[in-house]
Image (cartoon, rainbow, N blue to C red; front, side, top):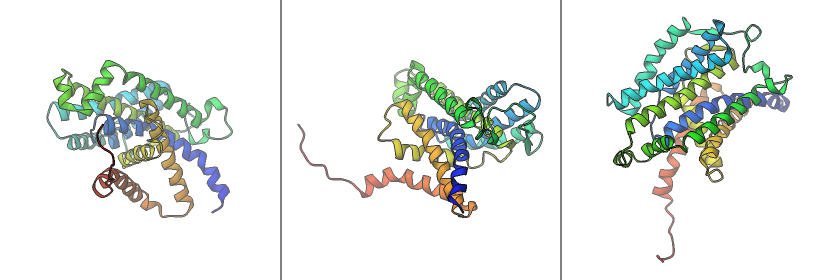
Length: 305
């Protein structure tokens, strides 16, 4: 296990972390903004990859394929939103039901459990081959970084509008939002659509990067997304207070996650335990606020002015 091999593997980890960072931003929107535990992402990530690969295999432009993948993800989010708002199904269960249905949908889209795409035959936007010895405009790290910055800029603008603020208000206090005349159900559905659109876009880029779409590629995606969110908040929470910078912190959290993952693999730790370690990290960080309030209460001094 040479240090050189670790250093050589880091650019690939950064590229993969950036791609998953798009998904992590989508998870952040539902988990932190909407206060909605959305398990649809495990299915919508695969949906994005399946739609993108199949459209490119049929001869469509890569940008058209990415757009359609995002729209497919938004449709998945719409289904979850309708199950929750219109049918009154609890948030977690509505996500599970959509995820379950997407398994069959994804199989029908691809026609089989996986579909490969050849980087030599198709004009892919990102690929594992586009990490080194390529022009800057074709480098996967640079391209995905630019995409993330553009997405953050658009989201920062959108959530500063009246509609975006109403979505944030719905997640912050649903009853108060309804009392102010806000259509909370519409906002929840729209928020889920935006979130799963980003997740599907991540799946589309990931399938290009790894060269195939697989029916199980989204398994455990929610854990990775939550890990990125928690790491980003833990590392950059006290530095990034602006909404846009918080989204950037989530993307950085995803990069840190994959860098640590690469180090773990380099150290020779059993890769079968990676998901278990990720779940444990997320559980501990989610428990920290409760532990602080329950076991580490500080005694404040000073009287009221």
